[in-house]
Length: 228
Image (cartoon, rainbow, N blue to C red; front, side, top):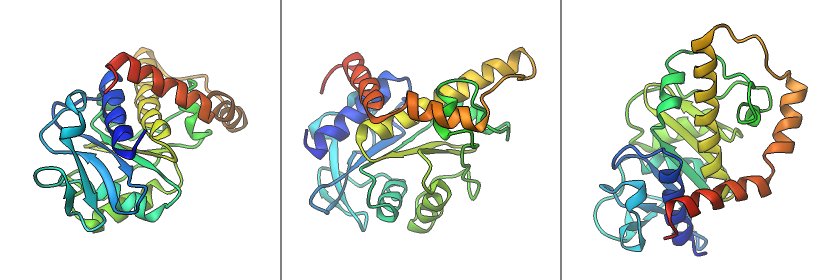
């Protein structure tokens, strides 16, 4: 697939995973020729994206291909991908369980396979603002918070995820939201008493979430959402 096609597939997969928030949220794929990122045009939902609704946005946030202005929050993707050249894709969504869980200021525990994604460590949280990340400065601060983690919570806002492939970035977003949902359900029933220790969580991360498994999950979501 081309970078544009991967970005389309990433949007469709996020829709199939239930991460749509009407027209808000976006996935971005690094342009292989170094021109910037492929990202959906503003005003469209994840499930509506096709080739005519994509933009190539430069590293200085200018639209090189496609119609209209870029997303106000394109700096999320530009600054994370600028900071970490090994990454290929980034995701920002307003996944409901992630937003709800972030409001509790509670550590994310490895009580599920999805929770083990972070190897027994709590998920990073971007606390500088709960508003839009609409400047390079805020984008850089978010990138610093994310660090080398697969994803981070943005309390009062949503989540951000990243990966060395579109498949990994999308699945990191999906798995974080599922981990939050599982822990919310457990906490609603009573105190959490059982979870993996750091060693088991790290082992489960390697066992459950190698690249092949992330690819398989992504492929399922693309099939579920309909191929672009």
